Length: 126
Image: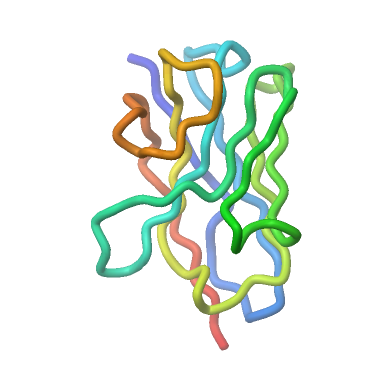
């Protein structure tokens, strides 16, 4: 059974950084765009944070992630990384990676994705 696994979450002070990783077994991430979603505390919807297409040809970011977050992929390691800098308390929540196994471009709607990780908690203290 293929699994997506996120790691790297934790507690950090405002202004700090975290690096989230997403890997999959036994599943070839290099065939697909991979997206990071964010779920705020107490909310049930998930919003796109960042997405990267095959071979890293293009990336897309939510407005509040631009200039602070960077998504990248290492297909040799079957891993997608989200580097998050200058974190703020408003970034607190659960971060999920997801794969859309149908589309080839980034999709902003979470219901387009059928393969999800379990999420990793990010907590930013003020």
